Amino acid sequence: MAVYTQVDDQTLSHFLSSYDIGEAISFKGIAEGVENSNYLLETTKGRYILTLYEKRTDPADLPYFLNLMEHLVKKGINAPLPIRDKNGAALQTLAGRPACIISFLTGVSIDHPKAAHCAELGKILAEMHLALADFGEDRANSLTLAGWKSLVEQTAARADEVSSGLEKTLKDEIAALESQWPDNLPSGAIHADLFPDNVLFTKDKITGLIDFYFACSDSYAYDLAVCINAWCFNAEHAFQEDCAAALTEAYQSVRPLNEGEKHALPLLCRGAALRFLLTRLYDWLNPVEGAVVKMKDPTEYLKKLRFHQDAENERSYGL
Amino acid sequence: MAVYTQVDDQTLSHFLSSYDIGEAISFKGIAEGVENSNYLLETTKGRYILTLYEKRTDPADLPYFLNLMEHLVKKGINAPLPIRDKNGAALQTLAGRPACIISFLTGVSIDHPKAAHCAELGKILAEMHLALADFGEDRANSLTLAGWKSLVEQTAARADEVSSGLEKTLKDEIAALESQWPDNLPSGAIHADLFPDNVLFTKDKITGLIDFYFACSDSYAYDLAVCINAWCFNAEHAFQEDCAAALTEAYQSVRPLNEGEKHALPLLCRGAALRFLLTRLYDWLNPVEGAVVKMKDPTEYLKKLRFHQDAENERSYGL
Image (cartoon, rainbow over all chains, first blue to last red; front, side, top):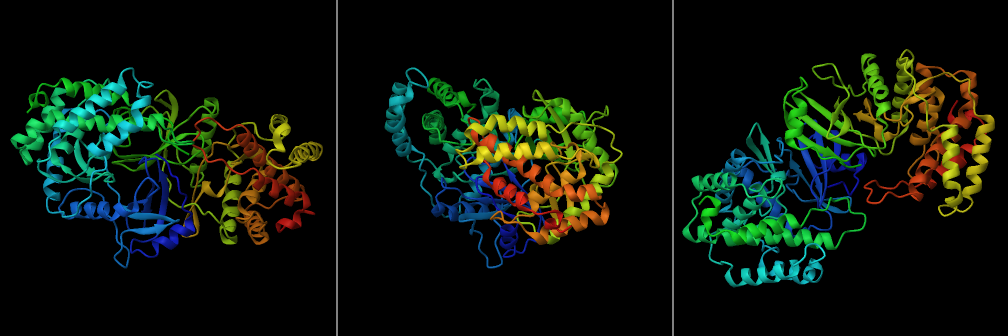
């Protein structure tokens, strides 16, 4: 959450001259996005975000992310629109890094979502899935079973440093998920990281979805499971049944889940909890020297995983 | 240059309810200001900066800084205006910290100023000094002779780690400055840190002065000396005579320097160079664990100090 790459005014001015978006009248580095350098750019014609993609982003994935955002905007979903330069190119190079200007979206993230916010989320999540049905591009999810298995191998030996018994929990869980993970659910492009900080609200209505840099091909219901994990637990990590019921009901009002998806939901929620448990655990065990990123607590997702393990069936989520 | 203190949406919403500036429609942490947490806040009524003052700022100094900004705005200088709440208070407490909302100023900082930018700067610097003549509040400069002497004592023993011979240079310089430092120059409130990143330009005209958190009582010519150091050397730290001439000429077109100020200028420039050399050296030798601040090179100001030591008289600066 910081600006890693500095862009000076002359570099910016030269960069903007290839666009048709006017001249800079304000330019501030913003403390957003863990992975990249982001600037809030105001020009004589409007407001934008300039992103420089740092090394954790694979440049080969960028056309997928940018095309996906553009597709969503064309379909009427409030996602950031990648701005094309005078030659029609959205993806650029700036200060030696891949870079892109996207449109700025207003709205404020909700830190402690209530059921009404979850209902808004469920509706737009389903609308986004429907809008992406004809997207037509594919990107494998590097953070699903195979990726989790690799992360378990890299973290298990030291996992008990974080929580006693965690090594066994991880190994048991990955084995359980491997044996039961569904592979026949309706799938397509998903956001895969739709946490509250990636959803902008204005007066309790969603006015923007942002940060599509984990988007990938996976089952739609898995995207819903990520949201259940991220939106339906309170600050003490206790499950909020009213939030989950609002989320799944609103989702289904736009895109009804089939029986297979409903049945799989508890397992998908376990997978989603494991995914964030593992990446947080990895970051916790491998702190980056001089990193400006605030470490996130892995045990939050251990608690969530335990909730999902105990969930009897999909009715626990209001289905 | 980061957000140290997180403000969640409910805290923000409650905080804004004591003001008459509308509701938040966007709220982004900005990577600006080394010392404090800054948010760019857009409401239904306008744009603002919300600052939470972190521990390096003495809360007792805040009324001085806020009153000074308000005084400047009343006098027609484009400084941030501290916004008062419904009870008339500008200084608040938020998330356990002193906090203030100030108006947002448009403009972009110039990273590599040219003579034309220095002329703009000289004019507004003098206008600011005139505008502050009747400010009437006092704050001792903690970073003048006595403060430098203390910093020399804290850094000299290890100074040669940074540059061979630096310990002797520091001790000789502080002795020379102590014996010659002028105490009878026209004085008042000064900015004391008017670096290019604290000056906002729109189309080569200055549209804002920001970051008054080093403001203090000192000689006006010392403020000019800080600007000569910060604006009149190129990226390789070589002195730019045309920049200095433009700066001092423009300054004098608004507020002519008296003979004492002119004569003292080389010495004041040495003092200003020593001030930034010492604070950078101190930070270099005492890195803060987990600090998100990019370390600044102390030797930049050693080179500048040497230039000023070699300057024969005020004519070196275009006077």
